[in-house]
Length: 82
Image 1 (cartoon, one colour):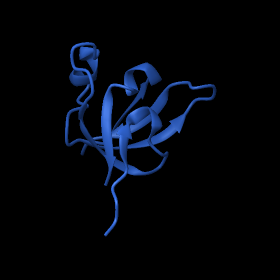
Image 2 (tube, rainbow, N blue to C red):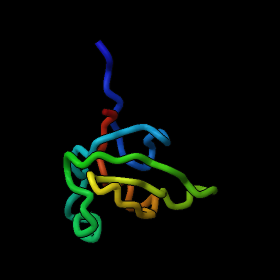
Image 3 (tube, rainbow, N blue to C red):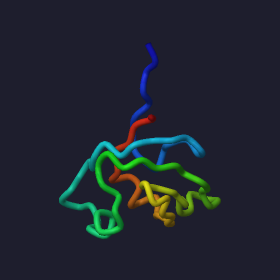
Image 4 (cartoon, rainbow, N blue to C red):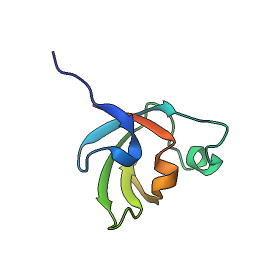
């Protein structure tokens, strides 16, 4: 039996497929995260992280959309390894 790694997007390993589980504090979470299509059950992969805790560059969804997301925003997103 393999154990699934879970946590928040800010601490997820690079170049590993993952899935969004939900959000840890929906009241404080920026609504733009939802508007960009980062919804529960969406698959993603972190392509790059800028140095010194800079933004994460991720690819997500079936369309393989890409965006840069600040670490502060990534802390709201709960994820698990696929």
